[in-house]
Length: 154
Image (cartoon, rainbow, N blue to C red; front, side, top):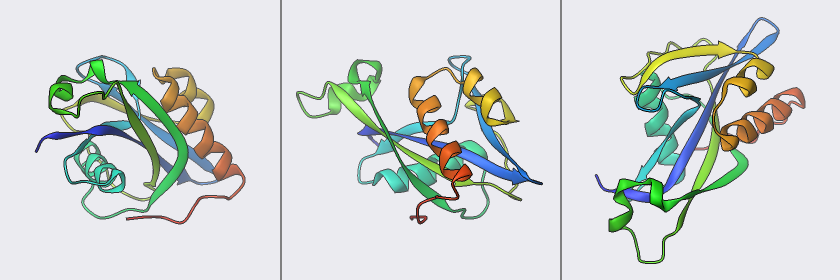
């Protein structure tokens, strides 16, 4: 399926006892830590792309709640091989952010990653490579502290 000119970011979290942990994944091709990330496919909405990417990268066997976040970012189109198939004048692509609750959900890391760590907020924010990941993680952390998750979508 051809790639659409948008990106999604999905921050996985789980509750363990009274603590919240966040998953960070090490990308095989870039050797950096990040949340679940990927491009949309032509005909997908950002929500559909987020569900697909989370399923692919975490090996999810069943649907899980997907929460839209306010965090957005812009990524230069020059970083994407598919740029030539996009409309003329596409210089940046939007990145839409979401969170998924993986409390009591089994996961399996895809071949895109070499490792996954479940960390507290402070450790996770320090290890993440990209600003957009840190911003989305910070928003999710604040929402969880305030018990203010938005309604799930899908």
